[in-house]
Length: 606
Ligand code: ATP
Ligand code: MG
Image (cartoon, rainbow, N blue to C red; front, side, top):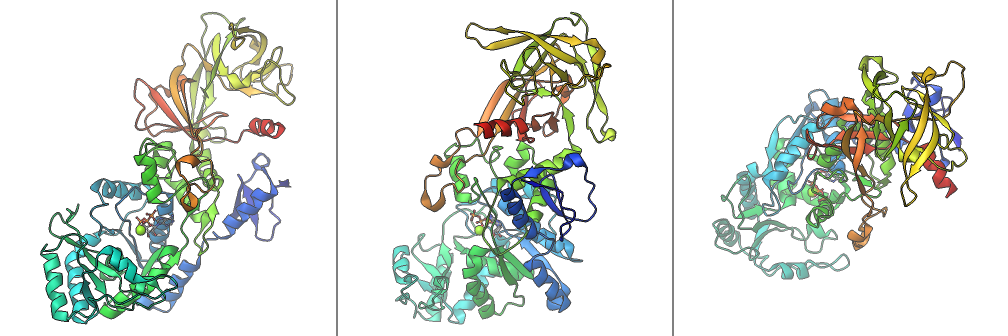
């Protein structure tokens, strides 16, 4: 184990709340030191070192600016296909595209829907994407749709035909595939490749006019069937698809393919740096070929970076659709989903997600990031700004026998231990309270400092109590404790200075509010779910959600509103569910646990 307080390290690394911070003057106190294993430190170092606030893309942009390339402009875009909800991987791309625009004076970033595939797209996704981008804290300079350019794209296609650089091909999709060749074998020319310009213009116009059925005719760029890059083997650039489009309605029955639509949309918008993920690297020659051949006035520079992938999670839209469609989750906003809507519902903050994206940095190496990195970002963000309250998740009734029957005391509890400005609330205390079942053991193991027969513990903000006896049901389960309290210990210390090691949270029975609490764990039990075609369903963690319906939370939460976040002392951070919580029934989602040293000890012992 390393003791983490690395102020002396060369890089001025401070390890704070398990994070490495490149800073020389953090406020850090002794009790904020943590112990991590060497492996954990190494991992955090790797992650953090890549995230010093510059990266190869920012470097390219800085160089372009210093050379006055693009007349000193920086214009980027975030280009989702509206065929699913945004996820944490998209957040990485959002932070990059909006980030570099904001960092450069006068820089602009557009939100553009790459909506050229009407059968997979839906207005539901368009709306959710806009809401998610705003929630993450970004405002687009302009909202764009590739479908707004369909007229221009059609004209560009005609221009290619006229240059004899595109032809209508009447092979069906299987034949096209067979002619395409493989990675080792060159492709073969289509028999339609030699059609005259006139014939192609005529056929393309008839495609547009709706004379051909889906899949019977396509427009292909005429590049090279023997190119080592399969994307360059006469790629399809337009196809017939008799489908209503969510933006253009029934105006079109031919639609441009993604590769044709994307680069030209970038060029039309005057994008300077077209940032995309690594899988587009092999498409870059086509991107450049289309723009060079057409001689567009603007030729954006495409730069690729690594996608985010998270251990124990999937970020492919296809897999996320599968989870939703097969009802493995309650929907796109299920709090276990990596979607922004799911994370928002769970209680994640936009600040934490942006911080995460900054920390992981931008590189060209595909690596899997530990969920722990994301989880620590949310803890770090919530800690200073979240009110502390008490909630008992698995209640055990405690009767304090020497406490007056009808008395209720109003104790004072600050909302935050280090921030007085957050104020305090009254906490009612009475003869019957609930504590956590886990905070009692009939036979206390070594190092168990909580309640046990004959043991004395402190009740947070209240008194010391001592366990005198237990009541069990016929099956031997402990259903109630009988305790006594020491009236001299109000506020949590004794005049005689005797020490108690454990401090428990509790809730007074008379004023308790019954709430439902949903505890979440990782959605998958495998680090790389569904990798190389393995069964996604088999990789699911059967214990990813535990619903507790009889939790007792303190009276101050009576008016807790949807979306509000609280730290339940010793339990973690929780958020009032925005879908299922109501005035009659409070429902909390656990955002994230605090660290529980006892669980670690128990686990190690096992
Ligand atoms: P998928 O491959 O899961 O279907 P996608 O790439 O098709 O996702 P888009 O809607 O096209 O999803 O994505 C919009 C932008 O977000 C693209 O520029 C894409 O490169 C980027 N993006 C998507 N997933 C990730 C990820 N995991 N990490 C970083 N950027 C991503
Ligand atoms: Mg895509």
